[in-house]
Image (tube, rainbow, N blue to C red):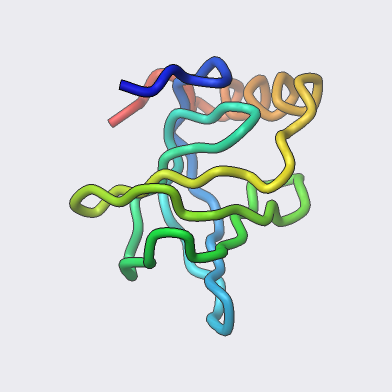
Length: 103
């Protein structure tokens, strides 16, 4: 099993996902870290496909699909989220009631 590069935060949030050449659609995000997250998808992407995920209040984050399993996928952010920005994002999700509702 691969060791995690960054601590995962237990979230359940709605985010916008865009695939190259497609419109945005809403998906659920879980297990957020500086380097990526887990998403529940609508349209099955390919491994290594580029996608952009947008959390409320942040610019869209360029990411690469690293794995798929059923209707879940793991993405890796091209550039890790700054730890301070991650803390603010998680605090905002917590105040919205999105923390602790992990699937």
